[in-house]
Image (cartoon, rainbow, N blue to C red; front, side, top):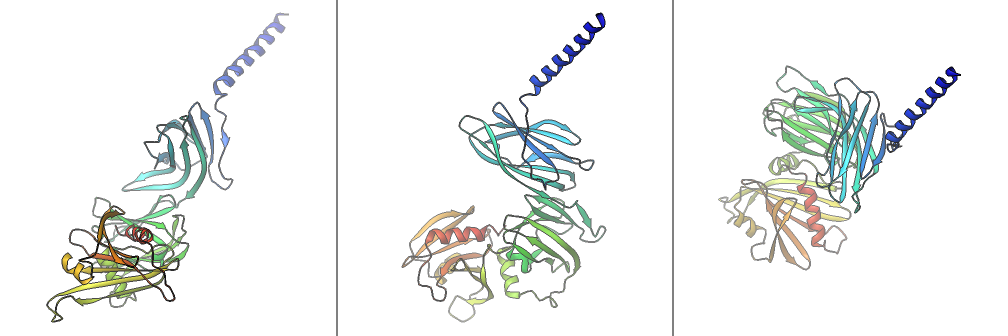
Length: 396
């Protein structure tokens, strides 16, 4: 009888413990959210007004999951649990709105993060101060690799977040390397200093396709040739890379294009640009006697059936620039485009032109639309400014 009593008591104790566990954990019922092809499984769980995001799966020793890229005015993100094979993030509401959250797996290695995997989730806070998640994407990156160690310009390849790639060129000086190649129509290249005499080049897709991208330095006599596969969602994967000697006289790069890019800092072209033409030369803006000369570069292209031209003047005073472009007496409006001060001029008949200056001692730019063959409609000012903003985003 006593034996039976103890057995019943033990069973009841187990049931009570199980009930307590269920009561404690009952609110944390995670709902699977990951794509079957994702290397790591991730799931969501609501806990009051907060959201828990759990990421599970084995990863290399020394790597950790971090949360980045979210709007601090909307969300607060911290770790609720962190152990090998499972990390839980707690996402708390701060203000109403939406924000992406980039969950990154990697480790710090010098000036670049050795990014291995990234899961991008969109979160929102509603008017009831509750956090919800909707939609996700993921990217996998090759481990960080250092090439040409011991050479004058060793370079490092790494993932740069949201599907983009990055290259660090050591001992390169600040932005000394220029960017050209056929893939310039497929990617946007952003530059930054690593603070140690090198430059980081972040490569993000703006078009879909595969092509060659060349980073070169005439003074150093070297070039880095990349094969890049890009897509217009921002993804850019480096398929091959090689450092080699650069000989200006032997290169087949277009001189007009090179001069224009070097003067303006333009690193690419807007997605969808077609019928692209480059020109570069000298212009006499005085009496024709050669006493007033400046450099004039021209980039023209079509996009979505509309034609645009960007002129770059170097070595010319601003008042001479306005007179040469017949803008001096035009009605004007001061504005800001992509963070840069600009002036919009009324050319009459619905046409407009925009002028601005790149840097304190940089080139003076004029941007306008022109009538393509067979066209008879002017481009609205709003579209002109929007297109210029796309171009300015490609000038660091």
